[in-house]
Each structure stands twice: as structure tokens, then as C-alpha cells.
Length: 432
Image (cartoon, rainbow, N blue to C red; front, side, top):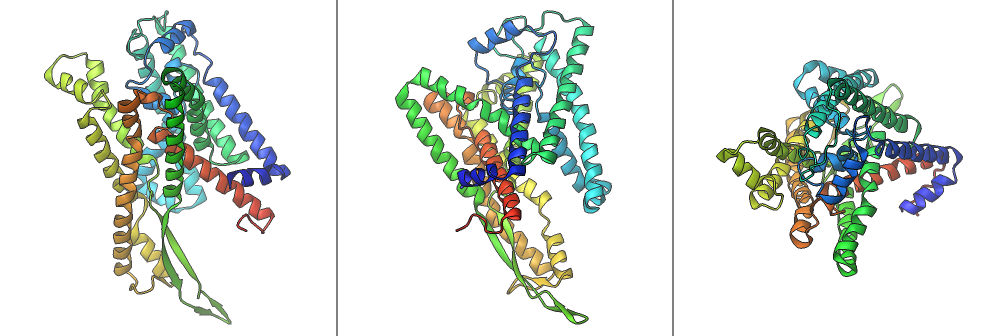
């Protein structure tokens, strides 16, 4: 299906221009991900990355930046400040009435929320770049086991320059993402995350081939294809709740009388619970690492929460994913609001009374379908841990849960957007 969609897209002139524009922005983004920030010893960083394990505490952020974080490049922070800001603003729409009103205002309210997200992104970029430079100036803190002097000049002017450059890099990344959304194909921020993760796949696969040989390489490749197929199947799965609209007479015209459905996906929350759980589990490790304490609590955290294959870590990780799956679904899908909108327009679920019985039924279906969805997310997320036990691959395992969820999700979403644009020009579609 994907090959058919992209094949027909390249035959359409305006879509072809959009695709090439998106590819050009992706190439520019990857170029900025390897340009070192002024003041960073590029040779020392490369020696560290070649000789030590690049997992550690910053493995997730390094994954989203396509390896730019540990290289301290211009785009070292990548898209993570924007993701964090977007999640915070989205959560605040539930807490702050002003934000909730803006969300209901339509395009003008969404524009204001987007502007708030941009301001918060810059503020988070300043904080994160300051913390990153403060950690990197001490050998062995950013890249575990590396004793190289990554930042030779630690004067306040040089540190300030690095912070400004990294913050400006985050602004450029945010601008590139918005350019893709406006003039390219797909959601710009998702495309940039896809680019960062996909850029590391060939190198990770080849490193497994060099260290483990062809049999293990072939087996991991086959397992990866099965995981991708399973993720595609679950991501496309949904429960369709039928909705009928009664006929209404307005003057001489009749409205309604149609039948539609409410689609509720099995994985309604996407990859957000995995990101939340991973970020939350990093906090104890970061506290223990930065404190350099030998107290019993610090030793316990270092023993149980730094090594990803520890049973306590695995259990906490899975439980947090399940919790955040329910939490995120609860704040993004409001059964009472949906039932009220259906009642206003004369809609009803066959066999269910309008009003509170409808909202109770929607909540019941949502709880039932979120259960397998949350378990699916937890299972996919611990695949790298299984790889660590079986192959010693750890963070270098290319078919890790977060990576596969994002790559497959973005790929499917982009293909759907291209298909919808093609269908606007040709009504014959692709289902034959």
C-alpha cells in the first residue's frame, strides 16, 4: 500500500514538490545534527562515542535527537523541548479554564495555544541547554566511562555562547518542523522525530552484524519485521461505535437520518505513555547521579533503576506505562462531552439512551479497550530489555519499543495524509 501511495504521489506535480521539499528539510535537519557547537572538542567526542556505551541516563533523549545530544551538536536538544512543551500545554488545557476556552475557540484559540507552546519551548531549551553544558563540562558525566575533556574552555563567555547556540538550534528545529507542516507532507514535528530515529537504524543493525555475526543479525532482522507487522496491526485496530442521527425537518428540507460511527483506537494514547514513563524513571537516576551520594537510598537507586534489566525497573516501567495510558486517554477523550454533542445534534447509539447512559457506555467501552492497548504498549516497550538479556544489545537494539512505535506511527500517518490529498484530486482512491 505504501509503495502504491508514494508511487502515485510522485506522478502528481504539486505533491512531488511537497515530498521533495520535505526531504530537503529532513536533510538540513540531519546536517545540523552533526555540526558541533562552538567550544566542543569534536575529536574528543568522537573518541568517547567510539569507545564507550552510549546508553546511560540520556539514552532516550539521544534517541529522539538522532545521536546529536551526545555529540553536543547545534541541534543537540532536537525536538524534545517542543515535545515537552506541547505535552505541558495539552495537560494545562484540562487544569486551566482559560486554556480550555482557547481550545474550544477553534483556529484562533489553537493559534494562541501554539504561540504559548513556542514560548515555553524556548524557556525549556534554555534550561535544558544550561543543564547539558553543566553536565558535559565535567569529564565522565555526560558519556559514562569517558575521561576526555569534551569542553576544553569552561569560561563563562564560552558557556554562555554554547547555551545561546543550542537554544537557537532548538528554535530552528521548531521552525523547520512548522515549515514541513505548512508546505510539505505530514506533521513536521513527527517527521523530524522519524528522521532522528531512522537515521540510527542502519548503523545499529550493522554493529549487531559485526559483533554477533550473520545468524544473530538475520534472526534480529526477522524479529524486527514481525514486531513492525504487529505494531501496524494494533495501530490500525479500532472499535467503531455506531451512531445514528434522527431526521430533522427545517423548513422544506430534511437533515440527519444518517449513520456514522465513533472510532476508538486500541492504542488511543499513542507513544505518550512510554515517553512519560521513561522520563519519570530517569528522575531518580539523575538525582542519584548528580548528588554523587553514597547513602543507602542512592545505592538502592543505582542498583535497581540504572540497570534496565533489573526486575524492579521492568515492573515499575510496565506499571507506569499502563497508568499513563489510562491517564492520557482520560484527559484527551471526554465521554460526557461526546455524549452531549451527540444529544445536541440528535445523535444516539442504537440501544442506548441519550445523556448519561451514553456517556457511561462510552466510558465502559473506553476502559475495556484501553486495557489491551496499555498491555500492548508495555510489551512493546520492554522489547529492548529482552534484547539486552538475550543479545546484550541494550540501547543499540534497532527495534526498540519507542523507536518502532514512532517510526510506524509517523509512517502510517504520513501515508494517510498523502492518500487523502490524492483522493482530493482523484476520487477513484486506492481501494480496488
